[in-house]
Image (cartoon, rainbow, N blue to C red; front, side, top):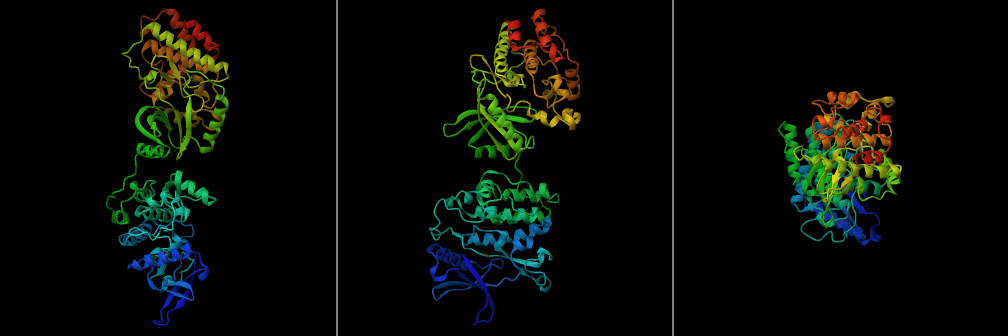
Length: 564
């Protein structure tokens, strides 16, 4: 927008920075307006860390600003993609935050804070010899000064009325989400707090929090993604300073520091070794915020899997109840998840059965896959208490209906692969419905495979006992093996056993003991816990749970027939 010269002011003999509108008398109205806004905003400031205005005028139709000359170059050149020591970065940003607070007290929001607009004035001769683009001198050798209020927003007037709603102004990598969305009404002091956090992030990590190949891609990251924790990029970043940084970078303005001064105060606490005010959000809080951006309000937790949590959530303006399953971060890569989605979409395109719970939406939440499906209010079989013992005929009929649904899947060339009580939902009339099929079923098994496909014993034993008690023994040999129909026969046997005996077939106090039980096979007969179970029914269960997959029932139809 402007061009800046080094000049000497005749009246005082001082060197100044002289800024003109680039096209002078031919400049567009919005360029002149931006120049006027910069002059008005900067003229309000009287702070040692804000570039001072010496004179505002016009010559031959060319508006100009005469400003304090800062000869150390910009912070962007000094950074040179190198992380800086934590205490040095914190002290530097504390100084900037206090200067920004002064601007806010003057009812001015900068809204284009970035390293290029932070000029470095050398403190002494030693710093001057290494000034400019060099980053050899420590940051403490320079006095930071905030420049370029050309995009400033006046909070007490309509001086920025030329900025239309929907217009996106600023620098993408340092732009707050409300700014990236073009929501000019939402831009306020919290917008500058975000940018200060982005600058601190770059000081700590050596790069901005969001950076992509193109401007639109960067804007999309700002709006949708969470920044990588600085400590993951540079291990020396203290946890407290990382918490301060990420607090600034919250998507919602209300979740950031209430003011630039509050940020400066917390940085002072960090530097003095006191406890900081900011707290890292818990995993549940972070998930709630992430899902809120997708239009889901988490209401309650419905259940937990080995590496996932299922929530009851409300969606959209109609507040439709849904089941929202969120996996742990790091369980798989985005590419692996997308490939799983493609495979599932192709495999389930032809499936139409009222007892299969359909998937409504899938997505990705900052390293966490998620799946949305219909919410079945009555809950799952796992919610039935052992005391609520089903009549024998009701248990048999329920298992037979499950066998019918599984048989339908097998006839369509599909295998559920993850049958267990928590994946059997009960409708209001007691009809069982299957959820958690190919898309998410057994997703945690990927991490159990060591090199060569063998099981990783340490990873397996790190799971809770309940997570391994429903694994078919063949999965313990190769967790990545594609499930065959006889895996579902085994799952039907596990569910039937629990319905009859009132307890899982394999479950011990520790994971290792539970695994030993699964490998050995042949749990006590259901009749040993429930004397009403006849020998014929014991034999059905025993055949379903045979450790040898090829000695189990060949088809789900045969299981249903035997039960009936």
